Image (cartoon, rainbow, N blue to C red; front, side):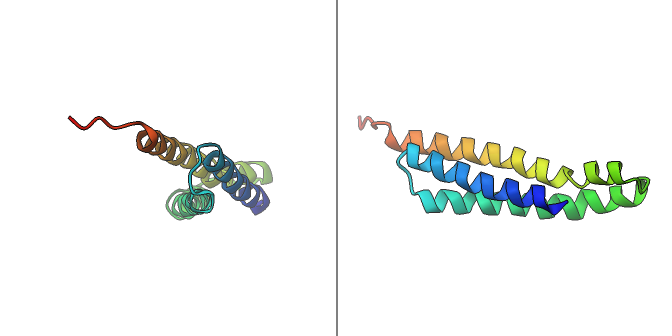
Amino acid sequence: MLYLAKFAGVAISIWFYLTAKEKEQPTLQWAIIGFIGFWLTWWLVKLSVLHPLGDMLAKSPTSLFLVTQIPAIAGIIVCFFIRKKLIADAVKKSAPQNDQ
């Protein structure tokens, strides 16, 4: 079940790397930010949401599989917003500034 989260973590690192390359920003730094953002969110959601939910739900394999994907989905959503913020900062840096 953790294979999907691992795949998402690697895919997000690649996504951030390619975006940084496209925006002419530090690629390795962006990839590390995406990687840490995903896994930090994954662990926080797993510890705060998944453990209480896991005890309440029935132990059917389908529901257990679906519930264990919640941290990965939350990590992907958070990384979307992190990437959006990094892009906005990169655009702001590259825009010419008026000194008046």
